[in-house]
Image (spheres, rainbow, N blue to C red):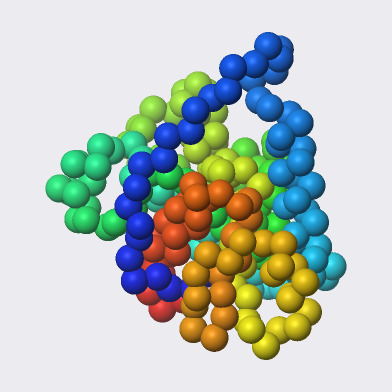
Amino acid sequence: ISNSPQIIIQTMKVATAKTTSPFSLDLVSLSKSHRDFLKTLHGLGITQSVPSSESVRRYLDLWLPLVAEYNNLCCYSLEKVDKEKGAIGVELVGLVPPSDVAWLWHCHRLAPRRYVEYIHNQPRLATKHEESKTEEISVAETKTLEADPPFALQHYHREDNNAECDEAKSTEIVEEKGEGKVLILPHTASTAAAATNARVLWEKMYPTE
């Protein structure tokens, strides 16, 4: 994730559309998002090769702890965060992973039982404010490490990388970064805010990465 000097602070309120469907989720919309997610990753070449050891390290050692920390911040009011942790500039609008990490996270969660077991066996991924280890709380803790927003990714695209030019045309370019641009999927303002959120928190937690 490339560095960002500051976060755009804004509150995102998503209205829930009324539906007569027996399902609590809009499966048609999510299916389309899933398709676009996989298509974009494939177009970027990420799904066409074995993940590198560096991508695995970034996912296990950096991204999952970052999501856990973000969840801990969500458990406090913004006033309490400012008082006890300092003004870290993180808005509660979700997080968007870098593209290589997004693919690994997606694959990991395709084996939900093993994913749950892994999360529960990592003390650094636990919710800090909960001391009880009841089954009900454990389930709640696991849900906090789900993708929010779902099927989202951000990818740093270098201007001189022709292999990514076609994919860049179908993905929103949200801001310039040095010699390249950051691409965001899906194409929404709330996802762009969540992507900025992730870059800011990444910089705060891992300034040398």
